Length: 224
Length: 155
Image 1: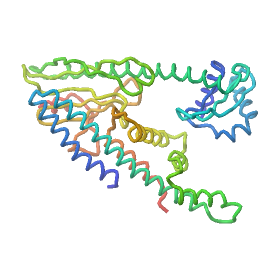
Image 2 (image 1 turned 90 degrees about the vertical axis):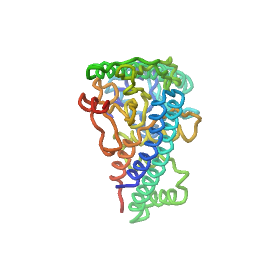
Image 3 (image 1 turned 135 degrees about the vertical axis):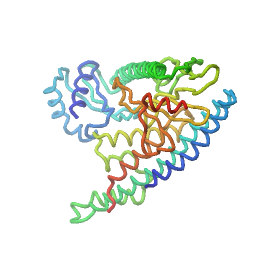
Image 4 (image 1 turned 60 degrees about the vertical axis):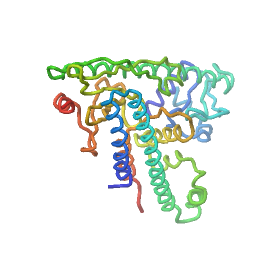
């Protein structure tokens, strides 16, 4: 809740409008009835703008049904809506762009790690990259990217295909499939977004209730 | 064992079958069949996610009915709102927004609500759109649904 207050103050000071996208505030009727108290609280937390207004938007979207705006900066709810939309798109564009870069960085790091784990006689052979153009990227105009994919080979024989499947997976922070001549493993990053420390774990039908952390010993075992 | 883990076990059998197609295609250096099998595997995940979601939605509905029924007692002044809600849930359950029900069973500021919201959005993108790019990691989702629903009231 503290974060919501800070976000509200920051957005109202910067662009003159705040939308409760996380839906943590009270409902519109409640806020409308207590707008003066709400405004006082915001001022005590650093809001420096004019008197606040609250109003519904015509078409609810992105989880938002109403806006709180600074009447000194924005004349009506329609102006507030335009300002919010613009800031929302820019904010999400950056968030998605950062997520894509973070994902590519994790994939390249995974490849380097696997390279370092390879027993002698095995090598990595790059394959044409997999295009990445997920729904959030299209929605927020983030250009497509290329995900690195490669085979682990012994001489000219493929031992494993390492192929990223995507970043925005419900239930994981990215997925990579590992396919060998006899098995297929789902490798997922279980770390929180932007943690800076990937937590790669793989899933097998033998150990259905628990993911296995990917380390050198397990990776070499998967290759055999 | 729960309905969620049961479904995840059944998903496993289907996923193994699609994975086997990938393995065979790769062994034959048939990249096109490998890609097709990968796409089929993804669709299978989507189908099982919807299956899981229907069971989760039922668990939410049941919990909401219990919570509201337990409050709809006592003096009329106290119970009138709950009576009205109970009638709404019992008669027009389908018309009651799923996230409103989620708000009854979980605090909006907690992770559980965010997870439920995330699942609901995923369900909507599959059910209402022509978007086929949604991806799901079924074992984790099944376990999470199981854990969340375990905290629901049963009486």
